[in-house]
Each structure stands twice: as C-alpha cells, then as structure tokens.
Amino acid sequence: MTTTEETAPSQVTDRIQRITMPKWGLSMESGKVTDWFVAEGDELAHGQDICEIDTDKIAGALESTWAGTVRALVVDTMVDVPVGGTIALVADADVPQEEIDAALAQAREQLASGDIVDDSGPKLGTVQLDGTTIAYAVLAPEEPTAETAVVFVHGYGGDKDSWMFVQEPIAADADRPRATYALDLPGHGASSKDVGPGTIDSLAAIVIGFLDALELSRVHLVGHSMGGAVVAAVAGSPAAAGRVSSLTLISPAGVGPQINVEYLRGFAGAQTRRELKPHLLELFADPSLVHRQLIDDLLRYKRIDGVDVALATLSTHLADGVDVTAALASFGGPTVAVWGAQDAIVPAANASALGSRVPVHVVDGAGHMAHMEKPHEVVAAIHQAIGTS
Image 1 (tube, rainbow, N blue to C red):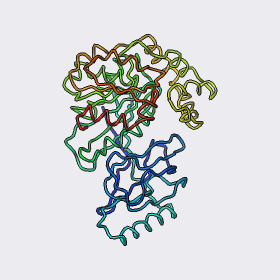
Image 2: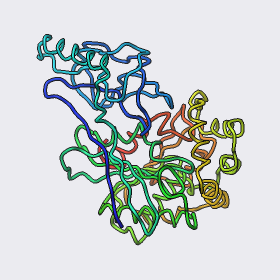
Image 3: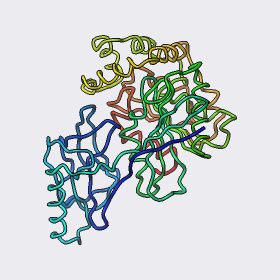
Image 4: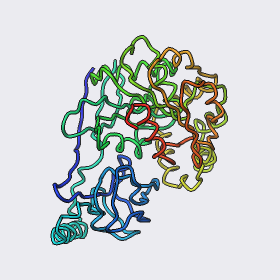
C-alpha cells in the first residue's frame, strides 16, 4: 500500500484574525456573501453563524472557528470573493483602530489586485489498496495533536465533497483540533470505479484498508446513508476491533427496513437533466438546493467510464436490503444518529430500530442530506459522539 499527498494548509496573524472565503468543495474558486449575520462590534463565538455564502454549487452558513470582536467587515454582500480572500477581521477590543484600519486597507488592496494565495482547504491524497486507488481529503492542525482523528464516509452517489460544511468545523475545533479525513469510496469521486462485489462488507474492508494505509490506529467514524452502514460494519468487524472510538450515523442505511428503491434505481439509470432532477429533488427538504450546476456535475460524474456499472451494482445490493443491526449491537462505543425529518430516501421512521441506547436527533428542515442542509446539528451530533459537546 502506498500513500501520496499534495497541496496546502492555512493562515492567521497574532493580534488580528482574518476570516476568509472558505473552500467548500475542491472545485470551488470563489463565493459571495449574501447576508451578514454579525456586525462590526459584535462579539463572535466559536460555532456562531457569521454569514450566508453562495457558491456556484450550494449556499450555506459560514460557522465561526474564531472568537473575539468583529472589528471590520471587509466585503459587501453579493460581491464575488476568491477562495482565501479576507471577508472580515476579528481582534480583541484592545487592538488599536489604526492596526485594524491598516489590515482592512491591505485586505481590500489584495482583493482588488487579485493577489490572493489560496492556502485554505484540505490536502488531497490517495492510497493504493491491492490495485484500488482510494482518494481522500485531509484537514489537519499544523501542529500534531493527540486527539483521535475523524474519518467521514459518504453515501451512495456522493463523494468527499459532501462533507464540505462539516469537516472543517470538526478539524478546527478551538479546544480540541484534530485531523479529519473524508474519503471517496470505490465507484465515487476520484477513487477507482471498480466496486468489486459492492457489498457493505466489501466496502467496510476498503475503509479498514484505508485506516491501515494511513496508520490510523484509532478513529471516530462518521457515515452518511450507505456510508452509515459501511462505518457500522467497520465498527462491528473483528478486523477493526478496538480501533473505532465512536460512530455518528446520518440517515444510515441498514438499520431499518425502509429505503426508497425507486430513488436508487432512478439515480443509477438517469442519463439526462430531465431524468436526474426529480431524483435529486428527493434528497433535499429545500428544492432550491437542486440547481443546474449540481445536476450538471452529477451528470459528468455518471458519464465517467465504470460509474454506471458501479452504481448499478451498489443500488442492487441496497435495494435488496442491507442489515447492520448486528454489527451495531456488537459495537459498545458511543453512537449518535441524525435524521432529516423530511428524509424521503431512508425515512426517519427507521430510527426506532436503533433502540434506546442510541441518541437520535431528528432535524426539521432537512431531508436526506442533513449534513448539507443543517450542518450545525450534524456537527453537534459528532461532538456528542466523540465527547466534546
């Protein structure tokens, strides 16, 4: 097994902290602040919403990983800002206004010149597992930390980008920063498209191989939908005994009988915008999140050689029914589940199968993609599972 990594980490000054345009997804180059939730002079706390940001793929609230006084809003709303560009300044009240004014002028000069180094976002890497390439994105503190790493596993048809609103707040936790990894399962993202048998157990074996390749001896696992079933299978596998500290399950498959088989087959078979859009609308409570760019990106993915076979194989197994309740029962560690109240793919009614041992948070205003529609609730659930809430 081999591993490779590339790209760059982040910034920050001593007395003045720069809030920058985040990189939500590996292809994001810019975004716009559409609404400020804070004003100059406000006290900013970790976890607080700072502003609403719109990208060419999705809109969402930027959650604070900073604390202090908001001393300057650098950009107006609806202005295109490159990733890494400064949008606000935070500093303690005793920092002289002259220093703030100088930092503000510098930030605006950089935005005007376009001379911005994008040092945000995750590093990319790959591991080779017996001929299968597994791609991943890692966010890690600049200094090594003793905190247990978190590994995110996406659902059917998703990829590592689907964790864009969740991975950074977990990695940048002010009190306990830690490494976070989001991987592409086989058949998805930048990983090999051959899914092999395509069973939950075979995908769990891939995740265990990933942990081995990166020498992650102990991890917290977070899984969505099919990925929820996969991380549950990992936690219950003798091959991973003692390595899983906690589980956070988001609309997990395999814990109850209900699953939208028409969605699985429809997503796998759709070849055009008109065919694909109705299925994507089933994923979200907010239909405005299904925009043309999202549809086009997914159609491009579906046209990559091997993806059609991969999705057909995976959807067949999921439609036939998967069951990870025994694996969950054998895992004695902390487990927390999150469900969108409007989930039309793996309905929240399935949560009853988890029993009283597992806290379940049903989130209003979210469908199957709670980690994209209501990321704060998912981040809170992850903190609950890993013991930092």
